[in-house]
Length: 212
Image 1 (cartoon, rainbow, N blue to C red):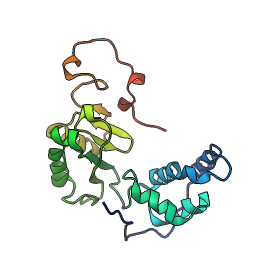
Image 2: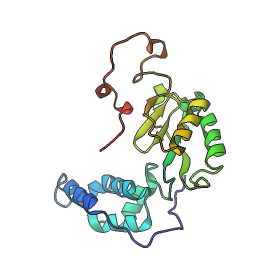
Image 3: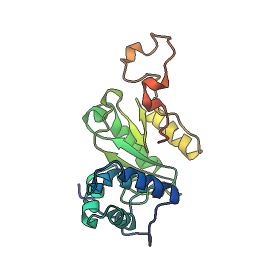
């Protein structure tokens, strides 16, 4: 799929003081002369700050890492984790559309996105608070279908539970990541209610909101 930068671009980009200090610390993890290896985490931090990766952000990262702008552009356009257009101010829903999720109902989730957010992918809702896209495998096949928002996975979804998830986002609630059927981790559905042992969040990172 051909991915292009948005035609609507901000005038400039700069890291906040906190993010700049974080980025400088990342460079210490790489050998001298190999700072370009930090391009993915640095780009990701830029996206976390602005919500998407703009042309000025790519130029900033290229200058910061002393690498050609086209190399940073190649990374940003290759990986679907990077958003090349402005996304919803409250949430950007990434719906997995690979075979396991498709067989378990992801197409129905996409229809909900079309009805509730926007008919077109990578387009904002009327109030600009939400957007969505179909993505390739998110690696949670055993918990299909699933949707990713930022760093959080929402699993075992169906039309009803997904509509509730969207409603929670609209109402500024903080939905807890994880299964929507009470399943813990990737245990067989038949075991979900069989054991009463208290389950520790350290055993399953997907039920903890990412605070990295």
